[in-house]
Length: 409
Image (cartoon, rainbow, N blue to C red; front, side, top):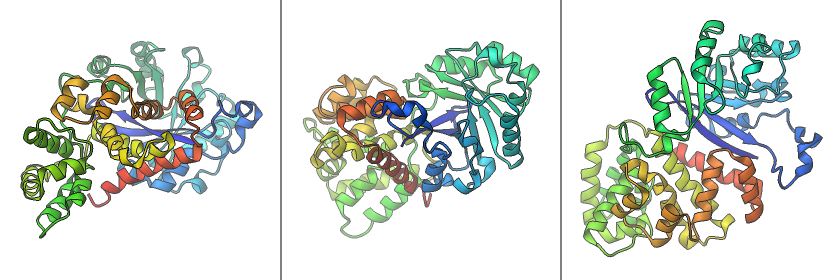
């Protein structure tokens, strides 16, 4: 199974909810499944499996999670598959569910049980035929590239005043800002938050739990440099700060891992730096979405190493590559300029700047995966001979690793 977690934002650029998008089979590898075989196991909702495995609070603390259901799984036993609070789950359907009585009754039943409902991929010409379905919806997803959302907002405001409008497929920060200025939209989704911006929040928020752990560690007698380096590696802000310091001390050195940087700094200087860095940021809030993205990419890249034939010696470089894949967003510079501030190995720079070298295929794969471009992901899986179960485990383990960072926060 393929599954990825996609953030949904409000008009303040804060994460409002997450969507779990999934695909059970590799249809390029098994084209016969696109026929009648595609419904094998369709009664199960993959998103529920992920929620049960990782935990709703760990996955999306205090936020709603949108989970897709098809015309078969909509009739499955939701409570048996997932014991999460109903009001935190939004069942996301599309126009493969027809506006027929048995479907309308089932949707009404789910609302009565406390679930929320959302509709996506509904063409404009179907708005009126789907009237009875739309009256049950809490949200409507409108594709910014296919629908005039300004006109749709007026229509839904008059006909369905209780439905929240979610604008999806937003490509740029400028479009997002224009839509938030217009007002009347509840949720926003797209690649706009990954594009370098010239204003707004660009600093990486530090992670409280890591700071506390680091303080306790470095103030103990004869602390372990490698353990301290591993904790630092969980926090994008700390890694950037550490590498800046090391690069000032050793101008011509190429840093290949966080442990390497910590060793170059030495126990005494590392302790001094950590105490200074932590004291100023201990009470900062939980990380923003850019931080989450960089950490997930870092761990996912590391987990993908064996599937791409990359040696254990280079897993630390994969981790740094993923961590710094949003460095341009964090520092509000081009990637090339950003990497000059935190000098890394040639392999990492080649992947992030020029999309070439031994690490680049892993980065390309991660970028397609997190967009839920399952057709391209399936193609790359075939080229790399990647087993779906191995890939699923690699992503889920990355999610669990990320969630564990905040277990005591």
